[in-house]
Image 1 (cartoon, rainbow, N blue to C red):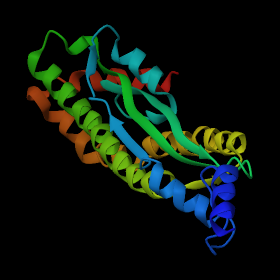
Image 2: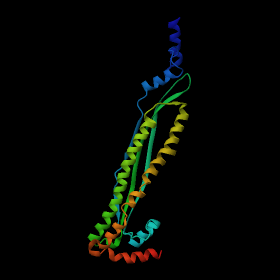
Image 3: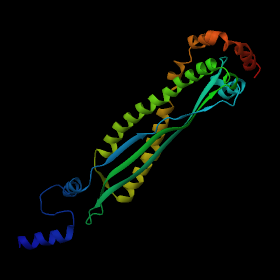
Length: 237
């Protein structure tokens, strides 16, 4: 009788047993832990490749900067376009008796700034010293974004590994898929975008009064000759 009952249980329950003495559902969870491959999370960054634009005047760059310019001299400007891409899927098993499923997600998130436009006022193109002065300043702003990419990617990798890849998720398959899609699209992608945009303090540490004072004497004063005209242009906006 015992052998017959064991055979019936094996046929009826698929991946779940019925006479183990374990709590209901525990055997299915154990089966999921054994058979599903580990969840995977990979947060990648794309290289930052600045594109230099020398076609606009410092008047145009000042207008482009808008309120960020204030009454400062906008001789160059850095404008990155933020992109966050997420590809996801999962592996799953289903308990044929209860209809419950278990999944382990796989997520690949790519963080990038593309394009990164570095503008240098066209007035400085013919003067190598002045051009290099403005360009070097803008590359410090580019470096802010390079560092921020790394910081955010490491933080997200750690949090996503714990949240998605570190456990097995149990429930109805369609519901699990819907919740996973919503969590990635409504929380993690916006979270990555928000964190990558949080660089105002770092940029402010570059655009200091001391840095603008350097422009007054840079290249034997050749940069400074544009500044009074630039201030007049800003005030006339």
